[in-house]
Image 1 (cartoon, helix red, strand yellow):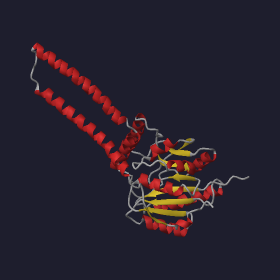
Image 2: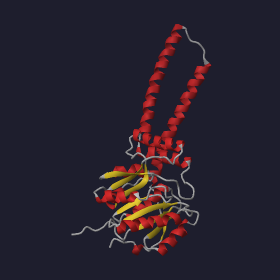
Image 3: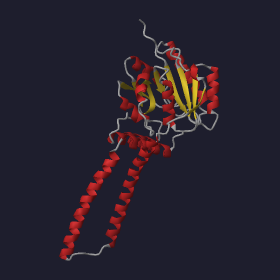
Image 4: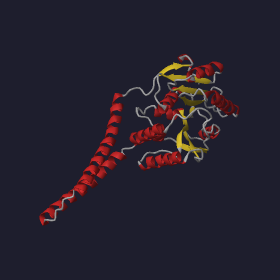
Length: 326
């Protein structure tokens, strides 16, 4: 009995991509065509664009693409909710209709040809295939240093994260069914996907410059994503605060003993500078610790609200037309 060819959905988050979308959309379609012609995937495979509340003509371009070719599909979020939520929305939309998904950014920086090897690895038995950058030649020294430092810090914090992997990955529908049980509101996909388990591997590629448009990940957003990743996946910062607090408490206790002994010996010397330094140091440490603890409390606060992580306001197809699996 011949095994059925898997249905692939390429999930592409889009935010203000009117300049690059007309360039990269035909590239994604061509990749679907090539993989189908090679007999690796079903001709029912699709390209799913996820409009993340764009303020330009991104959604109208997606609608036009869907009208012109049945392989293009699109969903639009009710408002901008961020890259991670957009990817999640696309994956959850696809999981009941396809066999495998590949998430990739719209800007054309990730090597689209790596999809061939990803599909091969899936056909060979892997349920998750991570796209990993082989080098960062296109990055500035600052971006390369901070990005690689982030992965090292995450691993040191105990998070199971693939080095130099972002959100270019293949995930099978089987894994997505289990991933749907992860109900976190604070999402960091590159750290959450490995928690599901299943057989996985990596493929390596070189990342190119953005084809058109501007990056939507300035330093501020990158730092916010990094901090969200740390606080969402690890409690080590809290444990570090506890350990540091114990050390400071011991030093403080020794200082009290020293002060008592010096007072008994009559060797007390007034020193306002040392006193001010100690007070300022301790005040700064306390505020820093309160800030880290407050960040975790804020995360707990948002989780308890259990607000929806995404809301789909529009689709380029009617609900009853969704099932392409047949």
